[in-house]
Image (cartoon, rainbow, N blue to C red):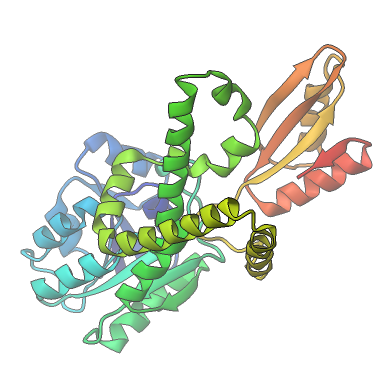
Length: 363
């Protein structure tokens, strides 16, 4: 029997647990320092057993998944290093920064155990064990960052266990991981926050900024609503990479400023053209660091019951609608209904159904 202990059974930890629980020869233990949380893990059927004892969870495990905030990883590793771990125990994490935790783990020289950094590159607009899903990691990239001294057999064992998540396993060194993730996730989050706060400042002088920012602006800056404490820890941990990326970003913005000052329309066009060409080569339907949004917009006339009718049609065809929002509905003006789905498959089915029913559907 292989025992897997998961510290922090939230969105990611819970999704990993759901992928492993019930598999032949695997037992999943969930740890939390709060008895109520442990009880919730068990009641929801996410884990086989639960405990509030760090030592009990660690010493029982063949695999330990540290699914705790980046700012708490070193604390847990330090604590685990004092326990009598099983010989060959593999300790891994799911943090979005890898260099610091990998270096810290190497400095501990874990007795009997091996640390292999990990990062499942999938997420959701929701959080907590309630949002955990058996399908969350399917087809997502799951990055492992073994060090030069990491035994290959340990990486192979972890890779084999993670095959149950149906994720695509990628191996890369920790520094390269932090460079790449810094550029494609951490920097965009900072830009979104700075942009929203810039508009927030203008709005203090003119409330129309907030009113007119609905729709597109709200959509492109949605990642600015991330958990503040979580992002504080991530950004500080990857600060050396991000300081370099910010210098590059500032240089790019200065380049745009020069184009505008010089009225260089050709250079502006070329910048959009280059960006468009590169973006078009990116995989459209693969899970990544910033979770995809599966939304469509439907023009609806101001008729009684029309929204209920649309929702019923989707339900009758077993299309899972996760959210709907009326963006505008005024007398004599068609309303706009935003429909949100959890998967691309549901979105595609909804668009086909509504289009065939005569609705004007846009993405």
